[in-house]
Length: 420
Image (cartoon, rainbow, N blue to C red; front, side, top):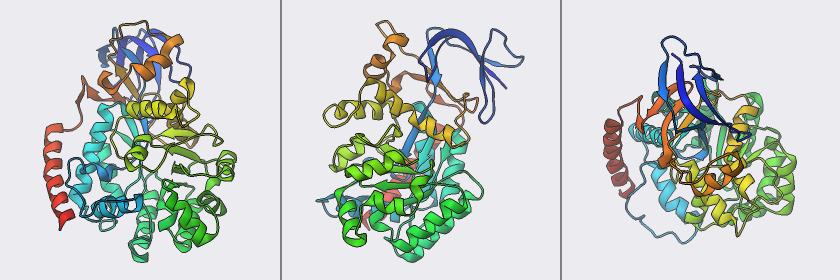
C-alpha cells in the first residue's frame, strides 16, 4: 500500500531545494517516491501541511550491545586509561551477553533509532560467549521494528584463537545469507593470522572491513612495537582499504602518511565525537583524510542529529569542519550505502519533521537551522522501505511498552552477571 504525504514541504537531501508538493511513497525495498496530485487507490494519506519531509537518517557506527548499560553500577576497578575502560567496562559487559540480552538490546536500539529519525543502522557487535547466531538475532529484531541494517561481528583474538575462529565462522555464515561487513575489534587485539583470514574473507565474499582504528594512542603504540608499522599502514598491507565497503572507526591518532593513505584509498571513515569525549581519547580532525567521512554514535545513543551537533561544536577547536561539511558528513553514510549497492536505504526512507521554527526556513539558510534548530524532538513520522514505522512519535510495528519492560528485566540480569 502506497503512502501519500499531502501538502508537504519536501527538502531534497542533496541539493536542499525546498518544494511544496504531494509525495507518493512506493512500498518495498529501495522503492521510489514521486511528486503528484494523484492519490493511488487504497493509499494511506497523511496531511503534512506545515511539516518538512526529507530523507531519513543513517547511523554510521553503532554498538547495540551497549543498549543495556545505561544506569549500570560502577566497574570493579576505576579505569585509569582507555585500555582499562575496555577491560573493566565493555569487555566485562559483552562477555555476559546472552540471547535474550542481545535481542532486548537490538529491539530497544532499533526503536530508539527510528524515533530519532534513522531508518538505517550500521552496527558493530560483540558477544564473545554467545557468538553463533548473534547477528541473525539482531537482524530479526531490526526487521521487526522496520529499521534496515548493515551488521558485523567483532572478530578478535583477545578471548583466545578459538573465539576468533567462531567470530570468523559467524561472519561467513551471516554474509552468505544477508548483507553485512567483516567486523574486527582493533589492530591491537587482532594478530596476523586472524587479520589475514578476515582480509581473505572480504575478498572472497566481496565485502569490507568495519574496524576501530587509532581510537586511542595505545592502538598505534602496540602496532609499531609489534609489527613495525602504524595501524593504517598495516591494514593497507592487507588490501582492505581497496574496498569502498571498508569503514574505519574513530581515526584519531593518525600520522600524515596514514591520512594520505586513507585519502588515496576507497575506505570510509566514521567519527564518533561524543564517545571520544567520554573516553578522553582525543579529538577527531578530518584534515588530509578526504571527504569520505560520516558520523556514528558508537553506542552512546541513537540520535544522529545530536551526533552532528557535537561534531560541529567541538570541531570548531580541533577539526576542519564548517556548515557545509557538517551536513555533508551527516549524509555521507547515505553515499556509502548507495555507492556499494546496499539495500534498505531507498528514496522511500523518509522523515517528517514538525519543525515549528520562529524564523524563516529555506534552502538559503538550511544549514543554520540544521546546526542550531533541528533536533530529534521534531521527528513526527518515519517511513522505512515505504512503510510507516513511526507515527506521531509512536512506534507502529511493535509494542514499545512490552519491549521496554523486557529490556529492563534483561538489564538487571546483565548488571548482576557483570558483578559476579
